[in-house]
Image 1 (tube, rainbow, N blue to C red):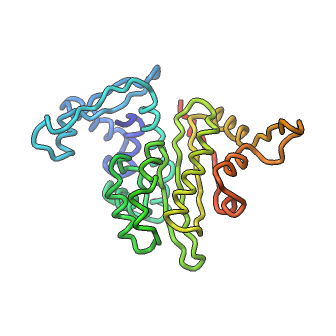
Image 2 (image 1 turned 120 degrees about the vertical axis):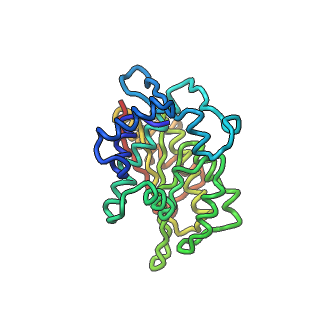
Image 3 (image 1 turned 180 degrees about the vertical axis):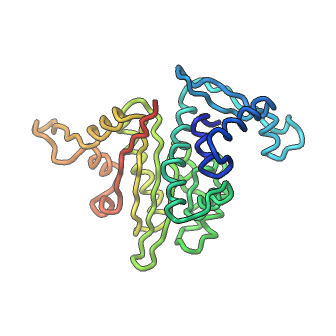
Amino acid sequence: MILQKQFIKILVQLGVAKYEFDAIKSISEMERAEIIKKIKYSNTNSKFILFKKYAIRYLANAKKSSEVASLTTVNSNKRYVENILKTQFILNIIIPSMKKRGLKLSVNDFLGFLDNINCNLLHSANNMTKYYKNLIANKSIVIDDDYLYNSNIATLARKNIFIAHIEYNSITDNTKIRVYYFNTSKDKNSYATTLNYSICYNTMKRLFGKNILLEFNVITLNNLIKDGLIEELNKKGINPRTKEKKTESYLIEMLRANRLCEIDFERMKIKIISYDIK
């Protein structure tokens, strides 16, 4: 499931279609062949593309349609928003990173690049086995193999928190980890953000050792939510006993409540980003 205007951009960026016109023509042909269908997104003129059961069977290499499940009915916009944010991440971060490194842009090279940077965006939260095997096979990073399969990586993925990049520096003995939290909430959601930030840090520290450098990027739907979340995280409350303003922000207080300290604070940073989804 993907937003049509994003799908067109990806087809062109990855060289599947030379021009947007060619991509639109191919999409129309797939629709006429009943490989895909289009549905209107919310109260907008935008459309989502869904693969029909026949196409899913082909992609899954199944012999019968009964062996694959149809797409489930979506009763809220949450799932649509999740897909929009993830696809925009590919357009904003992954493809530009490939260009910056001078890599060939194709579907296969794109998938290979995700594996090379240890990104789990396209791995199902219910089946991280392949991703775990890729991490273990990567001799350039140091990881606790025994803990990996019992870690919270799959749990984080169910919360829309995905690993974008893992890189070990043997000179500094640091493992740099960049993750993205696709926050689909229309509220500021400061409590969930700080809790997930803490869980993510503790999970990565347990997996890769104490010398980690975590960058936790929170993607919000629009600038209003972004600004509100930043304000909430930096807010200093009132001490109920002294009636004076507290010296530490809400973010630091919540991190301390999750048993993190100054040493940890130096090894983690949070960024709030808006994709301004309309």
